[in-house]
Length: 160
Image 1 (cartoon, rainbow, N blue to C red):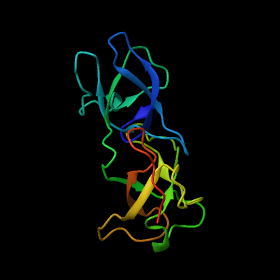
Image 2: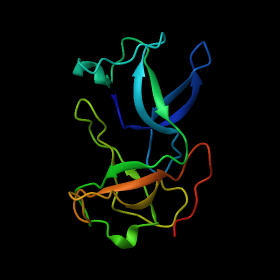
Image 3: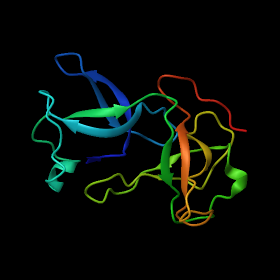
Image 4: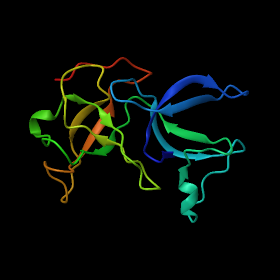
């Protein structure tokens, strides 16, 4: 199933009209962007008053068209996974992968992995810092601002 906020990659295929297809992203692989909405070929979007329309089911009975925020310089917010050793201020400027998680039926379950952060250019995200707000601090489930580092439209860069 696909949900709002899921990272995706180009599949290398398209429909009969040349509209490219996407697959869910993967750790250590370039990403195209993040799903921000979807609809049908005619342009109808999901209905926010009908929560069942907010996810694309794993078993698809019709075609879906996703809107993907794919500018390589967009800043996203992502929550750190709640297991392992939490990230600290020393992780800011490093790169890290995303880890798949189950969506809650409406929004993405993907998280920022706190294992393996490094300067490696092929890791999914560049950690820019904590999301600045009063309910957020370094520790379990912290929210971070990131850019897609290993992006299909630009080469990944080494972390600092």
